[in-house]
Structure formats: structure tokens, C-alpha cells
Length: 438
Image (cartoon, rainbow, N blue to C red; front, side, top):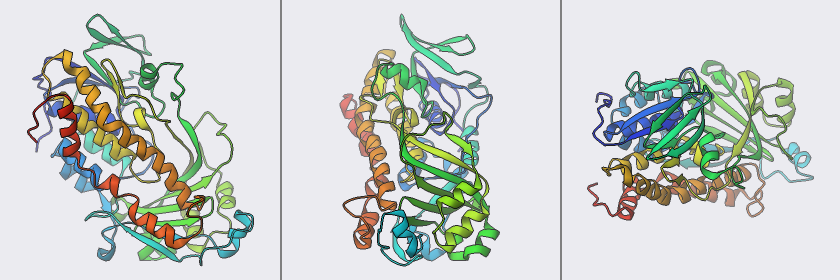
């Protein structure tokens, strides 16, 4: 299927602020709906930081509904578990700490089992854990956007309504007009600030009291260290106040590693991504098992990420300004659902805009989008924090009871993965008084 053309059929123009996954998916969706749009990106070129990003069944459905032509590009870069017997698994969960380390980490906390013990295997649809390298996924999306539609070096500073138009002011002193603005400018979003106002109590992202070491390991080295089964299939190693996850990316050529730790108090550095001191990581995971120690020792060019998320916003739109993705509901990564929620947002919002035929109805589309998306996306943020506490044996209800933990892990994600997006769109269309032809 060829990429969508920039051949507008609707009598309005949309400005999209931000060229990450959410912004690109929104732009692609608008083009498919025959809506004129311009994408404004603050960087000099499209770019993503980080390595692996999970795509759950819900995210893949949203991607296909958004643009069926994305499927081939996605399939070319998606990586799942290597073993056919583990193809449907999202992650296998194992105890990662040595028995003696539990008492030291938790004031005499008793180890719930032996290091390496399997807690649960969580199945996820027909395809299980699937991940893509962020940069490669961005390339797939960029190829679906007509050349010349994106404007680079455009960091938005203000958005205001002037007469019948929305006027965007940029850091370089330039300004542009549009009939509506969609903010996809990430966790440090300027459009969120404009929408909610400087005095909003839920304006800024909050530190989740977790940070993560992220890095990559060549698969050959990973296999040599921990064996085929652990290296080539998605694993999580759980311990008190920390957990480590690994999964294959780049068609099995590379193991992606993320090692999480708890932090009391605030994050004091204004930078959220820092070069890592290897001795800090070694100290953080002293007392963990052999598999974890070997994996961490092999990480190439690791860095440390502070994990922030957004408190719940009271609305995702105001007039003809809307926000989506991380600008609306930045989440921690503990359920692998952040990118998927941005893709879902883009599908719903662009299809609602595709159902209207005049500028005056844009706000109705934004209102319906807010109605069907806000509660679901904010629940993802809350339950993601809860998931981290679960993985790290900080949940007071479950504690170190492995049977209760297993039951929770096997059931907690289905509401994310099994969402009926067509029904969600129908609900939004009904709210707008539109006939559904889904």
C-alpha cells in the first residue's frame, strides 16, 4: 500500500507539534483522512532516544487501523521470542536476587524462593512479546510522510487563538497559522503547559522514585553468558527494590536490557538521562544472581534514565488545542504500554476529525476524543506505577507471596491488550451524533 498523499479534502488545516511516535502517527492518520497538516519538530531532524520499545496487541491493531500500509514496515523490524514454545509469552518472570540479599535489602525480609526460580509466564495474544528498535520504528513512520510536510527547528513557545485562527509562535521568532493544533511534544510538553495553564497543579511530570540503567548486549555474547533460552526470549528478573528485564531486538541480533532501581527522595539533576558510572550499577545490583550479574557486565554504552510520569490532567483539549501521547499522559515503562497509547490516541483522534467537514466541528471531535481516551490512558499511568511496586516486592497486599504475585501477573494486562478500538471509536462518534459506518 503506497503512503498517503498530501491531497487535502477537508476545509481545515491542522498543526502537529512534535515528531516522535505520537506526532508521526497523528500526521499519517490525518493524511489518510484527507486533512491538510504540517508537522513541526523542534530538532533539526527526526530522532528517537532509547533502544527497544514494546508493541502490544492493542498497539499493533491501532497501527494497522491507522495505516494498513505500515504493517509491512513493522513486520520487517519487529522481533519476538525466538523459541516457538515461548512465542506467545510477553515475559517470563523469575526471581533475580540471591537468597541472602533479601534480608539486606528489606530489613530482614525473607527470600520468597531461590534465585532463578520461575514465578510466571504471561501470555500476550497470538504473538507474545514484540519489540522494535525506536530509531528503526521511527524510520518506518517517516517513510509514510510526504517529503516537505515536516518543518524542523520549530520549537513551539506559544499557541493562541487570534480571530478564527490558531497562531503558533516558535522559539526562532517565526509564527504559523492553523485551524487547530495537536500537541505531541513529549513528557516536557509546552502545549500541555499552554493548555492547562501555568498555575495548574498537575502541569509538571513527577518523579516516580524509579530510575533505570539501559543498554544493549550483542546476542552472541548474551547467549554465551546465560544460554539460548534466557537470552533469546523475553525475561524479567525480580527482586526487592529492583528488577531487570531483557528482550531481543533487531531480529535477534541484540539483547535490550533495562535494569530498574528504587530511589527515595527527589531526582535532583535537571537532566533525566545521564552517562552511567558502571560502579554505581554494580553496587545497585550487588547480591543479585549470576544471570543478572553477567548480563549487566556485558551492557554496551549504558546510561541512566530517571523515570517520570504525569499526574492526571482534567482535560486533553481546550478549544481547538488538543494534546496526545506523552504530552497528555506520560507513563513509566513498566507495562510496555506508553507507545501503544500514543498510537491509539492518534487512531481515535484522526478518525474523528475525518468525520467532520467544517472548522466549527473540530472542538466537538476534540471533546469526544477526550471523553473516550482520558480515563483509559490515565489508568495506564497509575497501573504502570503499581506494576513496578509489584515487580519489586513493594506492594503491601501481595508482599512476597509468589502465588498471589503469579495470579496478578497473569491477569493484570488483559484490559490493555484486549481493548476494542472500533467500539471506542463508535462511542466517540455517537457522542458527536455521527452515524457509525465501522
